[in-house]
Length: 165
Image (tube, rainbow, N blue to C red):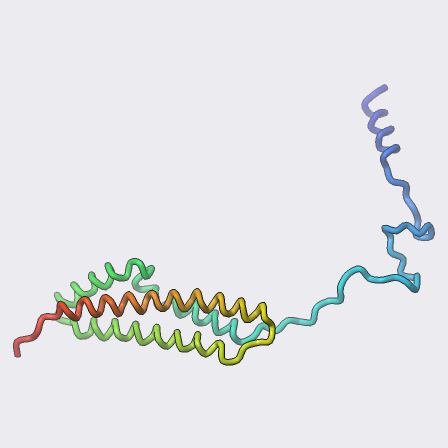
């Protein structure tokens, strides 16, 4: 017996017999029966994303731009030191200090925007949890940056050389 005959024999034995719609095959739904039930759930209503997610997106964009000049927050002490040395060489320490204070101010504005997200929450518990988790991540990023700049500002303000007027 050849391999082709064996395969043909196995296929004819193990092949499931075909039934028509009239034979009441349980795998073939017949929509003409009165007891027919659609096993699939009804389609969901169109989902409208709340404004909070749009606000989170804009705050994420702000953080990217806020960190763009100096890189990751872990590198900020080194960057601030280099900027201080440049400002000291150009006798522009006051402008350098104002730039740092402006960075802190912008961070506080972003924190206020995150805080305002939770003034009007949706009724979906899963969405509240999701918003909370995302906002918590963003808050920690901003707080880390603000704390770093404040600490460096304090360190370098103690180094400030009094002017002899």
